[in-house]
Image (tube, rainbow, N blue to C red; front, side):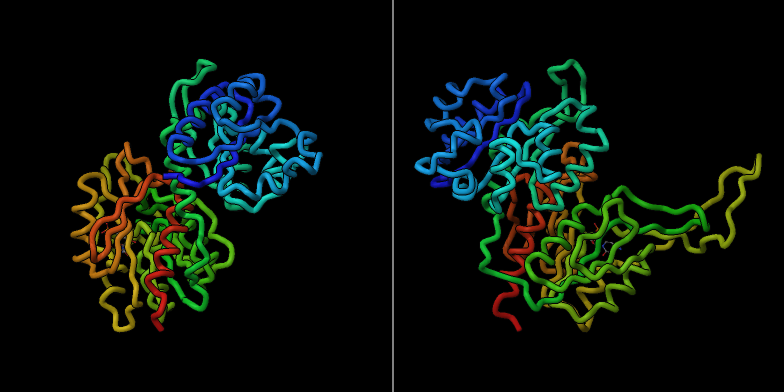
Length: 405
Ligand code: C5P
């Protein structure tokens, strides 16, 4: 529920702007107060009157509405909100935010605040895929902006792809998750050492070929970032990931599972460990020292595999075991049952379980829907960004370690 929460809703100019009307209604149904701001482009798609009627609030439209100090100034307008929601968010708004522009009311509000911002993009698939938009998104994520969507599907322009505004119920869920995950500042990880593993491992076949998996490293990076932001000293052991390591952590780069294991053990002692890496289960027993040649008519080589060490299980049994060991479980079916069994089998304290089936969409995507499995049961978390999952996990870690020496 959103009882007592105040949400500043910035409506950008796009064909999906009409969905903001339903969004206002649903947010208000859940008890939120919604203060709407329209960009001038948005006014081409929805009228201030209908927005104002649904919100039961005055609509803020231009910077000069606010120059009269008797009214609310833009600083106060943005800071008095519990959350700023941009929906629909256009490519233009993303670019302006990433560049720190402030040439109208919406962008000025966004620049003048340290309130959490949740951005629900909606744009043509080509605009979404454009390197400039990707760059802007990466920048905004690094700045701590949360994203919900966009979704894939048919677009108003007749094309098909990623770029549709997320469905309204999903945006509402993301709002709830974002408000819930906003750091309370109560528990901190100051003075704590946490080891994080992240990314895939590459297991060599010969000097040029390797076995790998599709892990992007995004969730591990988000975890490392959230822990560092909560004050922890983070040793970030990463395989060859797509995503750059977060700022403020000590990065240890490894390639194989054996190297990752050695790096984790070398980083002990620690107060906690979060194993977000997708470690390859097997490695080639004897990788060739020279490039294996393809010889016509000789067929494919047979690869002989051996099992890799289970770093999580070994750490859980280690003499210097950190007081809190957290594993991840990527499952495609009966997620909770499998993850609960995995927690016992590996001897760790918690498992963050997620659905990596096609429908779950966690692999490579920016969102995640996880269940936290602890000794006292399974706790499903709503779908949220990988950053929000990481922040929530960091808070839980801080709470669990509070009072321990
Ligand atoms: O057994 P499964 O691979 O599903 O377990 C996933 C969890 O175990 C993750 O936390 C992963 O980082 C960890 N793991 C590990 N070493 C392995 C395999 C998995 O640390 N060899």
